[in-house]
Amino acid sequence: MNINISYRHLDRDEKTKAHEDLAGLAERFIEPLLADIEPAAIHLRGSIEKHTTKTLFRVLLELKLPGRLLVSHEEGEDLHASLREAFAELERQLKKYRSLARNEPLWRQNKHRRRLKEAQAAASEAEQRQLFRDLIRSHLDGLYNFARREIAYLTATGDLMPGQVSPEDVVDSVVVRAYERQTERPNHLEIDPWLRKLALEVLDEQLEKQLPAEDLASLESPVPSEVDEDEQQLYEFYQPDEVLRLEDLVATPDTLDPEQAAERFELSLRTQQALAWLPRLWRQVIVLGDVEGMGDADIARVLDIPEEMVTTLREFAEAYLREKLRDSGFTMPLEEEDSEGGWVLDPLSVELPAAETEEILSKFA
Image (cartoon, rainbow, N blue to C red):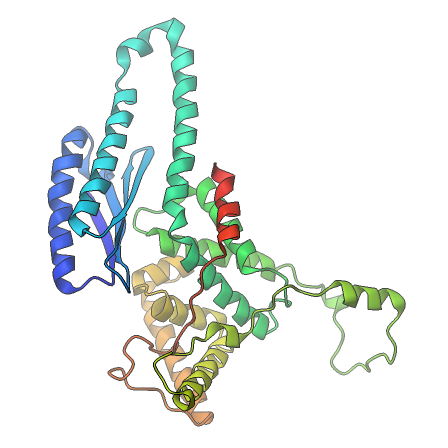
């Protein structure tokens, strides 16, 4: 069995204990039921996250088998208990799956064959929708913030028109695609990098919807002195509900005094401005690495580039950022002074509105 679990906000002792629990619980709950399946075809993936302000652990486990994906999601104040409950749920789903697969006597009876096949298909679809809802819910906020950042950058550079697409639209499109194409998700790509890849795909399609060249005015052409009535009505009609600005991507630390907070905000904003004007691929390498926390291998898979190229582009991008900030009178903090901020300082994270979350998930009810 291949096991790949990511950890967030756990200290070293908690990670060690969680790793030991995972191995023991997998051996107890899962492996006895999979003895007849090739180990290389079994993939146990997931994440363990500790809340940053209270004692609460969230456990998400995915068991990928040939032709089937089982998902369990648990949370609680005790990490071991949450893990045990998550594995117990996987065991329950796995026993049901194997029971259906091995119902051979009934399957041999011609008069029951069609009825059983239809019942299995209906149960499978309903179950898969529920499992997908449970799986995707905890990933929506991260996807929403990624979409907000990309749209703000593309709007700032003029690649997208203001209000052309909203972050909520991107999240909605990505979730639908993820459900329709979940069997295409590579075994070695975790769900968050995969969702970011789909989001970039959606935004690429939006970039292709720009005005044709003949509809664009030359910068050297004189501006008409009057606007006719039809054009005036168009301008009054087109009022985007929300135009994301680079300022909307920056968080102001609450722990600083007003003067320090203002200086920090200015530095963060200048960094966001410099990021916006990076070549798009360079910026994506920096954002996926420093904000999304991906390793070079995942960045390469998301962007469909060689892993060695990720290192090269990061070096180019960091040199550019350093030079632009120096030109603006700023110097980057040393790593030991701001180890978590890196090059993208104080990125603001917001929650996807609850109404939007429920509307998106209702598609899989």
